[in-house]
Amino acid sequence: MRMKNVTTIDYLDSPYSKVILDKEFRLNVFKKLIEKYKLPLTTPLAKKIGIEPRALKSFLAGDRIIVDVLERLRKQAEISIEETRNSIDVIDSMKEPSLPLNFNNNEGIRLIAGIVNEGRVRSRTIEYHNKNEEILKIIRKCARKVIGNLFQPSSSIDKRMGVKCLYFPPFVAKYFIKIGLDKPKIYPFNLPKFITDGDEDYARIWLRAFLGEDASLYPYIQNAKNGYWFLYPRIQLNRNIIIPVNIKEKLNKMITPTRPFYKINLPLKIVRILEKFYHPLLLDESKLLKKFGINLKPKFSKVYMNKDKIITATHSLSIIQLEDLEIWLNEIGCELSWQRKQLELLLSNRGSLNRVHLNDVIYKFYSLIPSYLRDKRKINESNTLTKEQKNELLKVCGV
Image (cartoon, rainbow, N blue to C red; front, side, top):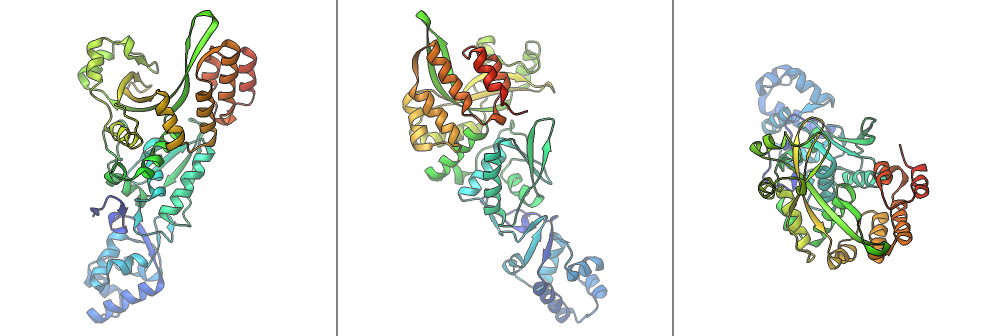
């Protein structure tokens, strides 16, 4: 059973979850069933109701019971959903849950953004991957606010990816399945209307989360004459989508795994087709930007084949205009303080720079990133840093 309200999820949305109820409620149910059927023994009573006798005995003992069985007991005892909900002490692994879970609030928006950006929704769990300790702390805090003050997601280290993984139980997964996130992120889906139609606070939270987790803030550099370079700050919001089969067949002959092909490397005919297939989520995010006066449309940027030979097309919202970047800094802001400092650094040094000045800016830009988050590949491939600057940055890079 699924509730129509897409901002909340109640225990009824997860019929196969297991719950534990408080003692007073359990005794009240048993009392009402005895009065109704005049059968004091649990086995005849269970058969009369149509459930397994051991299920009724487990319920009375305070053990876990499946929600579907609980619902049958509730109806037979003629007890309200509200009273039943308020008597649930544990559902799945969650003690004292806040029922129904409500995502129409600041913490709920942030939690949805996190799962969209760095999560994987399965039928029985949610996995959230990140190695940024600041963001992991934010996700845990938001989860406790939405799910319950005692909730603490279990975690593990994914050594292959070098990230920490947080796990959320089936009951929480049901919400994200409800809003259509039970498929890979490259499949089309939209933001819930209460986010896109919400106020600026919701838009601000979503965009800050996107920049902190999945978007890019970087200096775009062009070589100029007379030994001077031009530096342009950029914020780029990227989303991938699976491309049409007929185009995929043509691209299979052109693209090699893990190597991106930008639109300048592709035939114009294919580029024109791919420009039409942007992710609807990116269009929703352009609406969020519009709330602050930033008017952008998604644009195709590149195609990419991963190690599993899956080809995706990347579309972007590129924020490059000075006035738009200043709006982001002053009105949207940054979730991470070091990203704000990076944006301030680039904005205050944008334009024409000599080589020494440029090196100094780029070195400070990378120095602001926590050492364990620095990208060794980007530092090594930088053609603006000196050898000494690269070595200095790489000395304290995380593994």
